[in-house]
Structures are given as C-alpha cells and as structure tokens.
Image 1 (tube, rainbow, N blue to C red):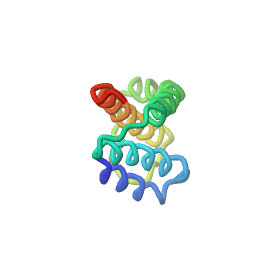
Image 2: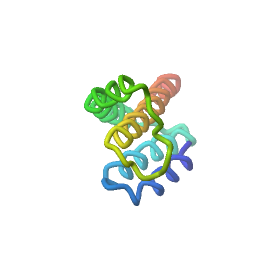
Image 3: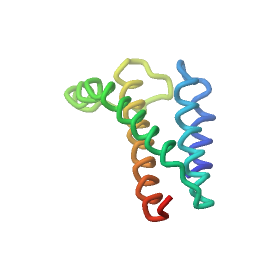
Image 4: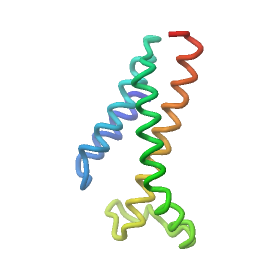
Amino acid sequence: MSILFILFAWFQLNDPDPWLWVALYIWVAIVCGMAVFSKYSKYLILGGIIASVLGVVFLLPEFIYWIQMGMPTITGSMKAEAPHIEYTREFLGLGICLGVFIFQYFQQKKVKI
C-alpha cells in the first residue's frame, strides 16, 4: 500500500492543489511503510484519521449533491470539467485514506505500541 500511495502522490503533482494531496498521500504511504516493519505511530495514525474525517465532513455536501444529480460519471476524462467531478473525486480519495488509517489503527492495537 505504501508504494501505491506514493504513486497516488506522484499523479497528484498536476492537480490544482497538489501540495494538499501529495502531503496526504505521502502521510498514508509513511504510515503503511512503517507498518511493514511493525512500527506504528499512534499519533500519525490518529492525526490522519482526524484530518481525513475533517475533509470528508467538509466535502460531504458536495458528495450528497453528486448523488442527488443521479451520480453522473466522474471518470469521463482526467480533467474535471465541472466542480462536482473534482469534489466527488476528492471525497472518495479522502475516504480511501480514512479507510487505510482506520485499518492501520486496528493493526497497531494488535501490536500493542
């Protein structure tokens, strides 16, 4: 997963707000990379959960709007022609990050750091 999130970060370099997404994806990559060596930072993981939840809550109205629109395609092209495309992609990206952070949280509980 660490390599995958490094690739996610790389592909965000051409995004309108790359600093935010590159930082978040590298954050996830670091947490996953540390887990390979059974090294966990409860604070990095909890911080990631908090940051992801805040982002999801912030973008939730836009995601709901996309659903109300009938969930039009967000994969037609890489360029986001409409705001709902970008917001929905960001919401889903944050959801993936949140899922990984939660998974790592429960993994670190098993290791008893």
